[in-house]
Amino acid sequence: MKVLTARAVVFLLVLVCICGWGQLGQSQAKRFLVVIDPGHGGWDPGAIGYYGTQEKDINLNIARFLRLLGLYDEEISIVLTRSEDVYVPHRERTGLANRLKADLFVSIHANAHPKSPAANGIEVLVHEDTDLPTYPQSRALALLLQKRLTRALGVTDRGIKHQRLFIRWAQMPAVLVETGFLTNPAEELKLRSFLYQWTVAQILFDTIKEYLRHAKAR
Ligand SMILES: [Zn+2]
Image (cartoon, rainbow, N blue to C red; front, side, top):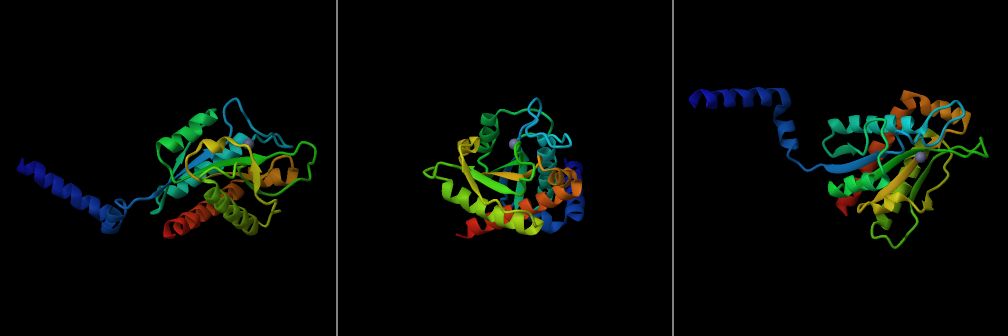
């Protein structure tokens, strides 16, 4: 028994040396939980680009970068609705966020305009029903994301949009981000690059954090 206790003390000391007192303390603090939903997947490729890029792959890469950013963050932890190339029904995506009682639900997509290859830029969407209890927060997050993304990336600001969307099933504030147009060849090439995907993920992560800090302070 004594040997076991001594071993437990040594183990704890080693753990403290590796992690540091600070991190052990921080791990006890409650982190915001954000569910990130990479749109489409599996049999559903989403939009197809001029050069054949499939939207589902871009969405998943950006979501994986977001998860990476959340791994060692003290304030936000990220859960993905899918981390592989599989199709997940919409009800299950929002259902996961509801079960986990997430603080936010953010669906990641890339846009398409079959008739206008010149269409470009970013738009953030909210569900059209303004009577939804979470509508004011969803709209505030959409406006902030729209501003931060377009300014940092220097792309066309198409404004936020209201549409009938599956994200209405989420019981927390929810938005859908269209990260660019795959039907625009120049924008498709940007969206395909890991550097651009990483940059988009970083802006999304920082803005989500900014929004949650502000929401908590109120
Ligand atoms: Zn999509």
